[in-house]
Amino acid sequence: MTAQVITLTSGKGGVGKTTAVANLATALAMDGKRVVCMDGDIGLRNLDVVMGLENRIVYDIVDVIEGRCKLKQAMIRDKKLPEMYLIPAAQTRDKNAVSPSDMMRICNDLKPDFDFVIIDSPAGIERGFRNAIAPADKVLVVTNPEVSAVRDADRVVGILEAEEKGSPLLILNRLNPTLVKNNDMLSAEDVLDLLGIQLLGIVPEDENVVIGSNKGAPVVTDAKSRAGQAFRNIAKRLQGQDVPLMNLESQGGLWSAIQRLTGRK
Ligand SMILES: Nc1ncnc2c1ncn2[C@@H]1O[C@H](COP(=O)(O)OP(=O)(O)OP(=O)(O)O)[C@@H](O)[C@H]1O
Ligand SMILES: [Mg+2]
Image (cartoon, rainbow, N blue to C red; front, side):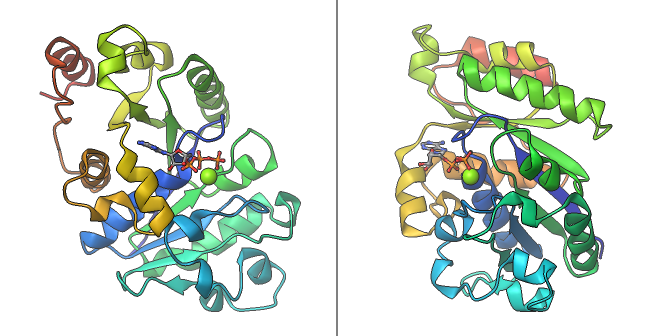
C-alpha cells in the first residue's frame, strides 16, 4: 500500500477546506479505505472539532516533529470508523514550528500503511500553505462562487503551477442554485471559465453542513443531505470512479453546459 497524499487549499479563508477534508476522509473510510488526515493549520486547529475527536487529543504534530512522542502516539483513531485517523495540529504553537521537509518525512512514514493521506491547509499562501502542499501528490483547490474567493483561488493555481505541483482540481463549495438562477451568484460555469482547471465536484450550500460540523459528525454520514451526497460523489471520483455531477434542481441549461465543459455526460 502506498498512500496518495492529497492537500486541500484555497488562498481565501473560510471557504470550506476543513469541512471538505473531514467529509472526504469520512466518505473514503466509509468506502473501506484506510485514511489519515493531518491538520496543517498550526495554531488554529479545528479539524479535530469537525471530526468530533477534540476530547481525545494527547499529542499533536509538533510533538512528533520535536520528538516528544512517536508518530503513532499522535494518531487518533476514529472509534466510529476504525480505518480513519487524525493527526491534530498544535494549538499553542505557530506554523514556523513545522517545515516542508517535516511534512514530507511524516507523510513518507505514513504512506506504507494507508490508501490516502489528506492534509488540511491553512488559508493564505505563506509558510503554512507551503508546508501543506510540500508532500502533496494531488492538490484540491476549494473555492466559493464569490469573486474574492475565485481571485484568491486563481493566485493559488498560479503558485501551484509555478512550483510544478501540476494543475490542481477544483471543489466548488456552497453553490446556491436559486441565487445562480437569479443572476445573484457566479455560476459553476463562470468559475470554471475563470480558473481554467478541471472540476472535481460541486457542493451545494446546505445547512446540514453546519449542523454536522457542530455535532462532530461530518455531513457525509447523513444519507439525506445534498452536500453529503456531493462529498460522497467526490470521494468516489478520488478513487477513480466516473460519477456524474448531481443535478442541483432546475439547472437544466447550466448543468448540461457544465457537463459539456467537464466532459462528464
Ligand atoms: N456547503 C456548505 N453549506 C453550508 N455551510 C458550509 C458549507 N461548507 C462549509 N460551510 C460552513 O462554512 C464555515 C467555514 O468552513 P470551514 O471551516 O470548513 O472553512 P475553511 O476553509 O477550513 O476555513 P479556514 O480558512 O478558517 O481554515 C463553517 O461554518 C462551515 O460549517
Ligand atoms: Mg480550516
